[in-house]
Image 1: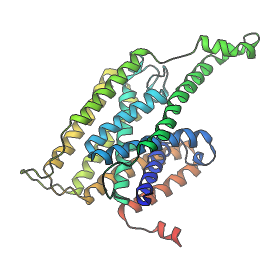
Image 2: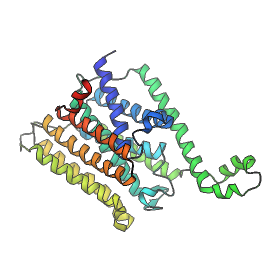
Image 3: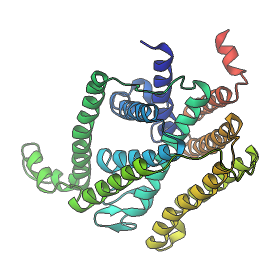
Image 4: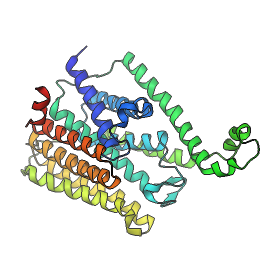
Length: 349
């Protein structure tokens, strides 16, 4: 077994699951210790999915642009086919029925796919590339290792959506069931008679988007970092651009799009990443010195903004333990990225 390779693999699995779930407060950090659902479902889904992405990136030498697109695909798969948040008829994060077309809450679907692309996938790989660089390209998983990985993911894709639909139906109609005669005997039949399911339209639309994005990853040309037109851009410029993107990305979500029309929200979240894409990539194409310093700047900006946002959420919720844990975790990740250790030295002692 290649020890360094699997150290990197496990790092990617842990970072991706912890940062996306705990910094966002979706899974408080202490739940990873005692909650079986968090361990065997949430962590394993994040971890194994990112392991497959790591294999694709290493096997085909994919750059960060293609990784970003793969991240969008990942976001659609998780929220559209596992957790089903894209299709839920009443999702608090975007308001009940906000921007709902063909069974999809469209603004939320776009937002959460972009969220996973940036924070779950790209940020995770940036941090991993900085602290445990990949020594060589090529397959990370063998065909035999793919069997248990894909088998576990297949079980999750079969089990979790069924659980979600049952919970939604039970919670929506619990009051009605409670006043029915022979409640416990008729419970199963009543739930299934009024059970909520995602629409076929929403499923086909998301599958179509995934197919188009996959084709884009395949056909997208490699970046030319040695263009004849060179313009050196400092790492500070990247920090400013990334910080501006994050502010523009989160503010409408926090205020639920300021009560504006859903079409405006959809156009906004479709246009924002395209503008950001052009700003960043236009710089990279003209910069033959896109080095570690700039990757550090981008990763730190993403991590500190997202981690700071998460810390604020825990304070608002009054969860002091969760706040302390993510602050310590954030500090450790910053030390690993910058290679300026203080807290980690205390652990070594």
